[in-house]
Amino acid sequence: MARIVFTSHLARHVQCPETLVSGATLRAALDEVFRAHPQVRDYVVDEQGELRKHVVVFIDGKRAGDRSGLSDRVGEASEIYVLQALTGG
Image 1: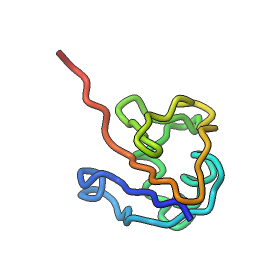
Image 2: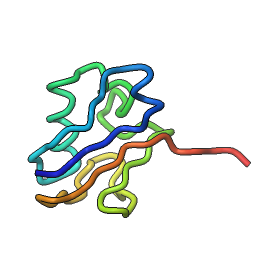
Image 3: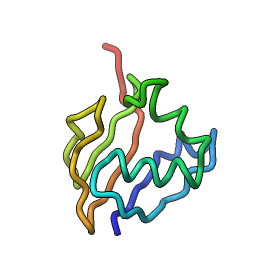
Image 4: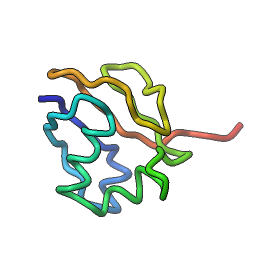
């Protein structure tokens, strides 16, 4: 099963423990977490189900490319990290 980890900043606001997921795509993996911890959804995705502007996801060390469909592949042993994206100058 893949492992999904949320930044400690997010954990200060909502319960989002490290979780093992079985989804084959980023969308499926996140949906598993959202079912168990629905309060996390609003911090990670917007009303259309797309990653929020200031959220970035890495799968096995590579930045997820599909911010709207969340179709990036997730392997059995993948590590998924959900972080805040830094912006500014």
